[in-house]
Length: 88
Image: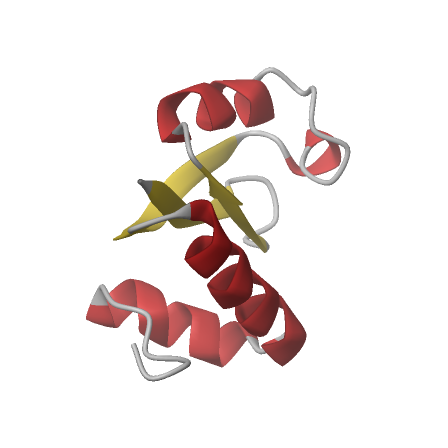
């Protein structure tokens, strides 16, 4: 089991997209400031998560989302509660 997740910075409203097989631990790592890409936008909150069968699928979805770089699309995913890419 794996997850694609989206964090939102409470400091500036920016989003961070990631994937992991251990969501609880990964969120704690972000919140501790140990992740390079989120340490300067702390605090962050989990605003979205979607479960996948394995990490390979989650990595493909994460990569696709990061390539879009559109805040409006990310906001729509959060609102809809579902990622609709790669035939998902």
